[in-house]
Image (cartoon, rainbow, N blue to C red; front, side, top):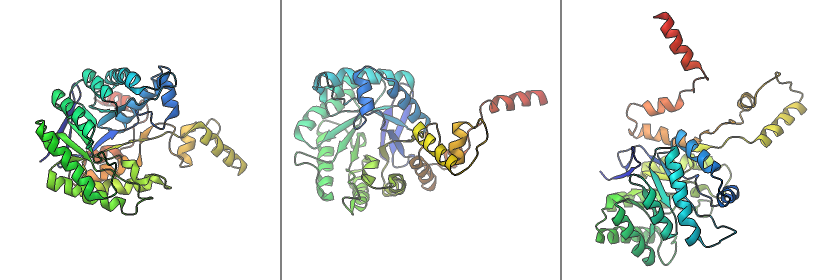
Length: 349
């Protein structure tokens, strides 16, 4: 069985055909997040800290670290990204003990991350582009780490799945020339948005099967790409992930957290309730209110995608006793409840 080993200082995550699905948390990434980008340029890491803790609490097995901020003060990422990557990795390692995935298109930032990362991180990424192969593969060999291989090359991203398979095969073969085994290659076959390409789902399922059966490699993807531009994206993601797992996909870069409801949304709902003449109990807190009206939660919690993954793990016998599924669905104890039960037990004794 193909197994890709990723490690922190004290914990090991195994990506493999016979392993529970590996969730690589994507939130520590300023791409498309203007607030986070502005914070990082200002030296404010509070969101990074919160995202690291929340993702691990919600079930991320590995955390992706991307420092791709284009500073207003200095737009050259070759100068700004390496020190920022080092800073974020050191910070996250001090908060949570899970393996990391070093994610950058800047070669110097990849090496900067490798220099400070403890354990055996996953490197994200190498492509079939000649320049990228010549720089990244020696790094993979030098630091003895696994790498994400993205199925595009100097010609760009092909819509033909056979071409994307050929690019993946080329990367695996070139890696072998450096002495890098196939089990240290995690291929991203590139998920296209199903709203733009009706066969996107079928393509990726077919590709994943071929990558597993013909190349013997593990696979990953940017899971939310499949639903880009569509309504109810979580509904599509929830269907896509178990289907991809059934085809043989072994990991995904994704958001494990259902984001808390905003104060603005709570205020709007309270105004709507009041306008309908509904009188709420005096002193009702926001969490009780949003739970009562099915609005979610004021706290970060595992998203619906995590529920789908846990169920699929159980159904594919990668959670043989169902222990993880039962634990996932156990309601959290009320604050102080555990202490009261223990105290009660001592009194009865």
